[in-house]
Image (cartoon, rainbow, N blue to C red; front, side, top):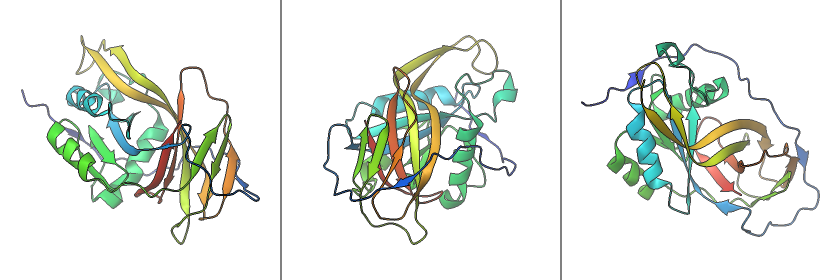
Length: 241
């Protein structure tokens, strides 16, 4: 049976993502590319354990996550929790991130499963061929030097939008998490969820000059990604540790 795609409009709401302290870097030179700052193409999956259309999309993201230069990130949204199963990874911050994308993508409202590539284009996640094609033709983010070392992130010089760009700190659990779904549309199934995002925080505004900021300690088993992004739009640069 062809899976259906859920769609809904979200009511306006304020951001709940806490800002981190930002320190303008003093005397930082151009940062070298290191193993701790590998540039990647970002593939964001907006998913829900309570949506029957999601399982194929999760599998499709698992199919593309083997590429070394692709970083899939699964953001579990909350607006389908009322269907009978509350997403165990869900966060309102992830719902708000998806909602912020919709105007620039020409969407009337968020839906699942939606995949956004480099913040610049999207596709319905349960179709693999369009996803592969979008990744293949994605314009690589600009190489803005970003270095992640311990609990400090340093960003070098580069071309920034006139109003600056958001800096996002993303924590995620690499690999696949298997969740046994007990109720709702996917009841009785085990749903694999790739690269589960556990936290996303706005770390400040990058203005094209060198800057650094302190990041909270990372929990065991989690990895860190840093995204420099035009507000609500394309990702300008992204690295993962």
